[in-house]
Image (cartoon, rainbow over all chains, first blue to last red; front, side, top):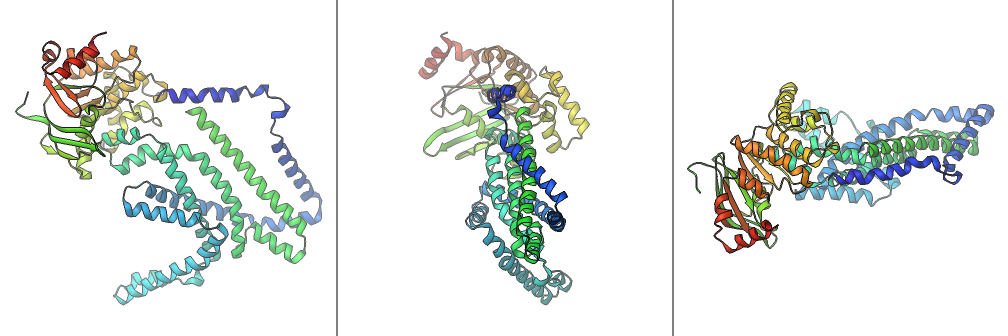
Length: 288
Length: 248
């Protein structure tokens, strides 16, 4: 009730008194990371070897970013559906959602990426093709063609990698969404339903806006985690920065340059994103 | 106490929570435009009875009829019936992510299909009526308890309900805010709204109620008028309850 926001406020005020903080309390770890980044920039711009390595690896950046962004968007979609499924009172939906979450969470991401890309997607495409042939036999050739127009060879590894990441992260996001929805007090659903809203309308207009707000920091953290895990798609030969770096190191033997630059690139992106997440988190708290 | 054409008919209602009988065989008719206050000790099933009326709790058995239509599980129908029944909760249950105005316009737009302007106009009328039009752009967390409860009443009224249910609307309020909420309720009662209130405000019973229902252990022990309740209670348990709450 009315007491809750008041209980949160003093905590923020204590943080705001941070002007009195001593040297001990400064974020030294952050300064260290900035130093590392500055050092890296200097080396890249002055050292010939580092410079050429950086320029080569940079070519993978667009793949890393696009893979992460597309896979994460899909994962939000899967996660929201599975999260709603997890709280559904329908036994079948509920158990299907639970099965998905438990299956994915019980398998290492690396194995999942191999499995989904090399077993799951081909299986799915075969099934779709078979369905297409069946449709054609039934006389619906036009519709059937839509399902037989592509074969396994037509599905690029990048697409498979994106599907694999999205399916994997969907399960983790599902638990975040479930927790977020369950954190909204029962009275909100009752108030919405008492006004005549259906379950879906109440979810859409009342519960989810509040739940998503509550879980934004958690969603942000998982986005940062996915930026890092996107490096795993290199095992499928997708030319993200990790894969491009590995290829370069393999031909030039500049292992030191490649992995220093790779590490710094990931570090820069994730630290910046973490700061953005913290900023959002703080803003949300003060607005409560 | 029966009416020729009751707007709410409760027939032989039972509601169990596992093995606890919250409502234990209640039948009740409430006439159009009547103000009925349900009183009784805590745990006597008052709130459960109220929540069964709009199926926020699904009855274990028994029938509820609202204005000639039976309330059933069927989703589409229950939503239609609920839109005609305003409900005010003990803890207000305003939507904290929406402004006061948006709280009052949301269901109008989603359920009644009113345009933005029309919904806003009606919302302002209702906020005016509960006495806080100036808070339209505020957020619920910036309002006092009494103000929040008045917004909750405006939110329910904006749907033009036939019936208003009040579930202990003043129990969570600081004493100095109770009056502002009761004033709004009294005003509604005088305008002829059908109201069912679970409340312990005896002043409200005296000034606004047409009928009083006393419940204990899930059963209706006494169904009488305010006059009959205060001056001539029939049942020993009613007398005991009254002596306990009226003594101070």
